[in-house]
Image (cartoon, rainbow, N blue to C red; front, side, top):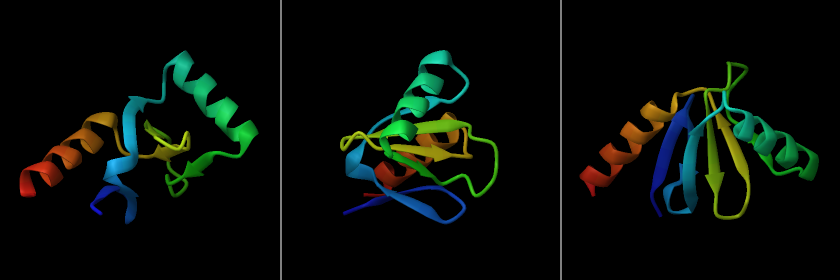
Amino acid sequence: MTFLNIGYSNLVAAEHVVAVIGSDTAPAKRLIGEAKEAGRVIDATCGKRTQSVIVTDSDHIILSALSPDAVGRRAEERDAGE
């Protein structure tokens, strides 16, 4: 199993990531709200502003303080290292 660093020493199982989206759009905010009501949100921002929303295959939503571009670059670096 490989992990993706999403900031502040938080790791996510890379195989379970479906999408990484920005948090400033209305659909992303709606997705976060619905997941909070269902208890499926994992806040990995460490008190910082949420910049990206990571959607997993188990319908959990992970909030990260890294930008979607930064998370994507880290995923590409992880893939290149394999």
